[in-house]
Image 1 (spheres, rainbow, N blue to C red):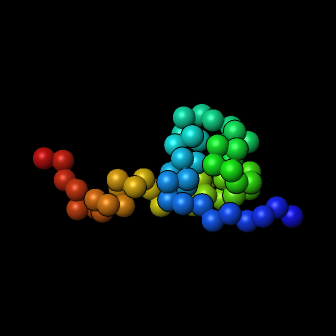
Image 2 (image 1 turned 30 degrees about the horizontal axis):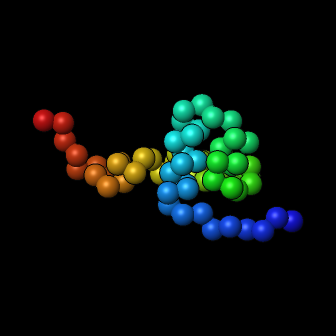
Length: 64
């Protein structure tokens, strides 16, 4: 088994951005130095939560 590395918020953001830009899972995982399964898990979790901007603004954001 590989050694587990706790990923920083920056690394997690890198995973999301790389995937959104079309990078493969393998290359995305290599970018931050984690396993493919960790990259998939983080991307799926973050995709369900929404973007950082959405979490900061909440639902009170109005287009006015």
